[in-house]
Image (tube, rainbow, N blue to C red; front, side, top):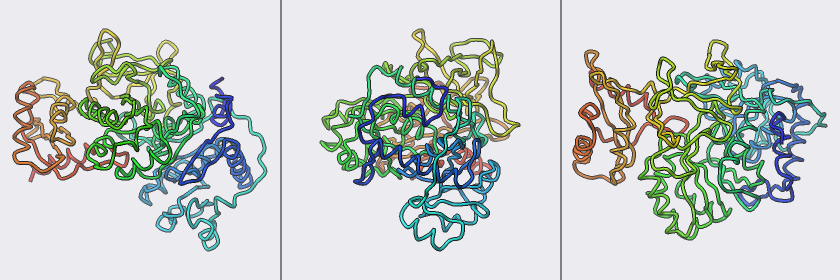
Length: 510
């Protein structure tokens, strides 16, 4: 299948099998034919509302059938799906919508009243419970269920932008990645060409990672639909309810971030026969410790599931996953997917074993929407992206994630990777999570290690400190180990390193 076509056409044409359930959610099922009819209905309505090729249409929705249908309908109509976290604060939301020249927005009916000011001057399509009622009382609001319009064919090419995905960028500054049809489609073929097994309509993907996240859309929705897997959207991850969800929907594949697995390991009702259908867990979005990986696999095995956890690495700028550990090499993020090239370089551009990770391939974004943000470098006719991450490579080509370059700490001229300290802490059975950050006193660097515990215990900080001294060099040993009730988290479910760094430096500045 040619990747230089629209998301919609690629999804339809990738696999000839169509007589199955495309989406199931809360007891309702959409056959593949039903799914395509819904897409065409909404695409026709968008054209009737004036959407033309290249227009940005806002998608401020949690995972749901309506969200999935909307993204493909926007693509079918020739527009760009501007996918935004639905709980973004009003001022930032309005800034994003105006910056992308968005005049039509699909919004959750549950959040619409609190965000209506952000949508002033725009047409709003309410999705979800009560959308019809909202459409009847709020000016400029339409109901998703009542959208109608005759669809007219639009010529869409692979290089046309399909999605705006909002990211922290490779430097941590918020940016808007322009993801083309070609790049998103390339990820699908790269992924399935790299995994040594096949998936089909007998499989069910739990789309639990948010659609506004590259991993959530590309891996949780677009790839499985192309492969004719049944997609089960879930609005919010709830550890206590996951086992029941897996049992009811006969889930076989779960995309996850490390924090999800950590929560499930301490959830009493997760496990047993309810999860025996699970065959694959793909984990990315943050560093996954070997201990959590092994413990989760053991839990699934005891539950009767013949499953394994596959660790990966990705970033929005590469449409999420671009490195995958299909060989199950301990502690490694794996090898690059098919049709993806990697280079490990020092700051002078020399090839090294330990250094900055550079990536190239057809799954790369087209660039950032912001004109002053430059990330792609052309070398030998190929686009290359400096990820901003430090990795180490072995003789077999396996990559080992060391951390973000911006998190690198220099102690007496020695490079200290916070991930090495965190790995020691995370390997201890009573530690739930950890994060090492830098604090500076009179411009001298020190290391503070924050930890959270599975259960309260005496002298946890002292035991972690002792283990660090036993396993790490003197430069890696933290000055302080601080126990927190809970880690501050970002909207993407990652530990908020910036908040912890600010907290560490504020404490010692006071």
